Length: 257
Image (tube, rainbow, N blue to C red; front, top):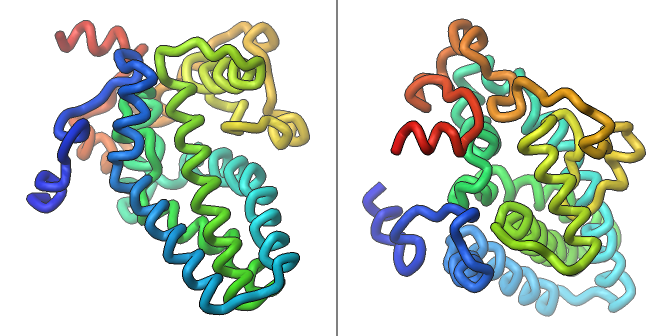
């Protein structure tokens, strides 16, 4: 813990709320965050491995392209079936992980520190999705190209995710669509719009929606089904969170103030 406190320098010496940040402040905080720095350093290391164990340009490009193409589907499946699962909070072995990687984010969607994925979950996932396919295509060099592509794609996704929660009105129609659908996921009905930069898989799996198509707001949009009744049965997340927070995050913050 002391090491972590010592590391929180610059903008990360304090907490950040995306609804109160400018675009420039976000960019500075983004590149100072340890997880983003880790992804970039590992990308450099992967490119060195690709250079040390060369494969053909075609095989390297194919490994990287497949990693990038697989990312939207991998994210959709993880987001829908793991992050929005209810089995994770039912075990003391997975409750802490679930709280960190998604429950806290839905409890306070604009809290920047819990918006970023945790390295102990993201790095193994990136490796599993990219390295085996890359190795099958181009050996060690192909695996390195695939892993590097996965790391950079993660950086891109994390930044897009930040933009979606930033108090910022995009000019690009693509960004407007992306932000609108994601805000519906967080503030209207969490059972849909699981994509980040692409909603192709939501459309194919029938989870894509626009707010007018679901007039009723979900009662579990902020707690992901971890209600007071659920906490009575499976108390581990509540014990770590100081209870079960209910209602809109802004309203809770006003009451706390």
